[in-house]
Image (tube, rainbow, N blue to C red; front, top):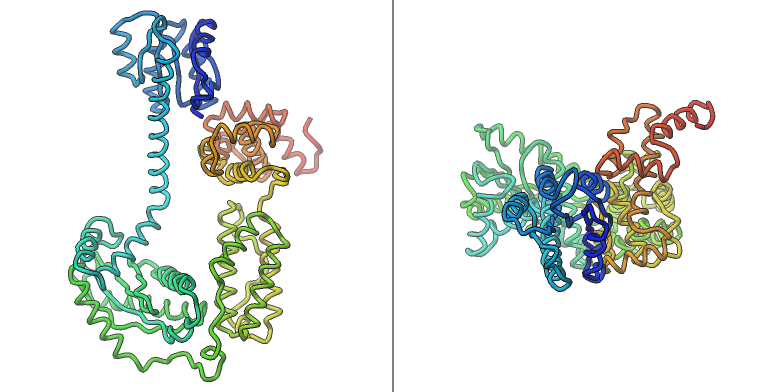
Length: 548
């Protein structure tokens, strides 16, 4: 729904415009009215409309001045100006300051206004879509660019001539490491075919992504990328834009590869070997340099491969967490379903036991479970750095296959701690899936510029339908619920601040666009001002009793 306000100093005129079209049916929600420009500016700050229909001639601040002020504020509010006079100067001034159109009151009718509103709605939706796309790119560009760099690095080493051309252009213009003064190396996981023999394709891909991510974490201050070449082989490209000494480059790379080898062995029980790194002037020579690096790797076949003769690793493939199991477990956590979470975890450990309970299976799976728990905690927006206050199991602890029950019980305690600290909302009980999804969206994104349209898109229904469902099932409209969530978070921040909190900062932290609106909503919901609540919270903390 396009949030709309009407601005005219004559109530009859506002009623006339309101009655010309079926606003809601055409996707518009009239969220307020004002009788002059000054009132309109206050209302705009409170309800954040996307469209303003304003009269030209009004006492105080007229329509021209309102258009100018909105233009100066730089917001994304469309304005349609209405007037009883066909004055070119007025037309020119309002259009110059961003008005969408200029309509004469005595000529405007339902079909004409409907056509104009449809045009404006299309423009707003297109603008919102572009803004969401831009926001998504801004938020995710670093990760997306990392994935692109991995893909094009592989193309440089193994791709066709056509792929090679695109990859060279990418590294010249977008790559995070540039296209010159590079060092290239290759790494091979030992016994890769053996310990992945019975893994599904998706599980192999997941394992490779985990290896690549772990390697990337060990780069420290080095600027580089790692790309999966499949079958346990990985390509490394490092940029040394300012380093001139090849000896210094190799020293830094040696330290990095040692960190990677130690991490792969301790966290994933996987051994790896590196071929000698090769210098390169620019990316156009990657294929030839890769072949030299790969040949260097082949010369190191006298590797200390994992000894499969003394363990179950060669006789029985290692168990790892499947993608379906991971998604199901994450969903149970996000729903706060303790019984389902514990059932899934017990099933995972039973699968490990039935497959031989190898050290490799235990270490891989527990590592994946801990990573999943930490990911869910970060996604929940928890303010504490960690949800678990106990001691984490060491690599030595995870090397005791005969203590699988103890390892399982520790893992259960870890997830119990997570479930105990994840935010929940029991008021969701009895709500439809659509309203639950919308509420969940609000609780995760209340700090952002949340709207009914965003929540509806997340829930997969239209905004008007969600609006009706929300009012029926939650007992309040969407905006009231959003404000309730924000105020609850504000109260928590006030209590946590214990007298040191700054109200002028809190309203931004919980998603309000202005302090005045935050002040008004807080008082309406809590029954007292934010400062009065803070004083009461401080007295309660010190034991002086409740605020009066």
